[in-house]
View 1 (cartoon, rainbow, N blue to C red):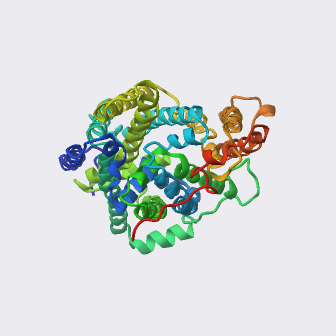
View 2: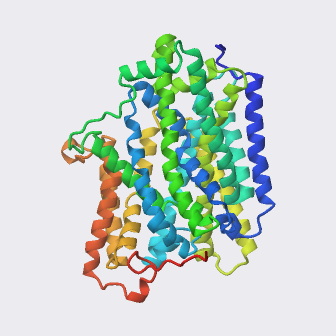
Length: 513
């Protein structure tokens, strides 16, 4: 087996072919673009199966490819627990969120916030999402470059620039169609990359699959075991379940990148299928990459390496790819890692451009211009998103400490209370603009307090008693509960103001058979 830690010509050829395919899909989609409706929601004509693949691709990201195998290699399968809640969120999406947003024919999900609460809510939602998207893209691109960092002669700055420019080009020219169709290809590559690695380990390990399963089982590597105590200050089963449930519910109800996709589906029935299959489809993929980590652990028990024993767990899989896979296949699997990251980057890039164009530029700054004008602006703003992503990713290279605490703090604050703002509007007729605003303000205060506590920036006596994974849970509960009860201090919305804006006042259209 190869022991080189550098890419060979066959591996580079695999990467070049992958990048050519991505750019070709972007060019093909660009020739079909005629309007902002096409750029933002694919003229609502995308097949449901493609939408489902794209939503899966955006959900799994490079975290699945690197963090899941690393976690299973180091411990067990407990990291899978939050993801097991996603079918619940997917079912709610099928019966509530999908028909809800598609009936309104939204381009941006934050249009709903203005219809329900007023202009302030739409601006708040789209600004938070846009900033979140910018920072998320930069972090994902930076993390993507880490597996190639150890390669001799491979400049990490160049790798960031090349990958960032390529994803920006096909997203700028092809819009949401390019995002969805490249995600379809990238999801297939991603899954095959994991399966090829499993097959390689099966072949090389003495005893094959039987050894993997027997030794993994004997050493509790397949366990979902976590602490079952009813304790919310530690990483217990209940904390993981609540974290996963609230995270997935918030994404299906308020994440522009998800909602934009099922609004792009060719029918209401197809959109519901896409939402459901994307939720259910993530679980077997997560299982595959958990299993990769277990396979790696058994493999290195039989073929121990001093370097591996000293590595961080999430570096073991890239090391295996570069040193054990045959020529060409290593390049393909690295392309799969890149695909996993780009499938979430392109979604965030297009989503950010959509809300900046629809919610800010067309709604407030320059209304009343031609559709062609807004299409050109959308492309420019997509390119601006890509430029910011590159600047942020390259800036992270200068940080000596771990970027995860920084990213964690930014994401926590920017996501604070947004899910609760949507939920109280959808599930309550009593909620009004003033009450919702009070709920958002208090949830942001709680978010900052819990985030500073998680980063050990507060004295212990003033710190939050909850585990950091509870931040999203607590802040959304605060946003929902305070928003609801504070609304009783003000006049209730008039019935005509709630038409099709809550589950109690919604009437779903029946599609012709």
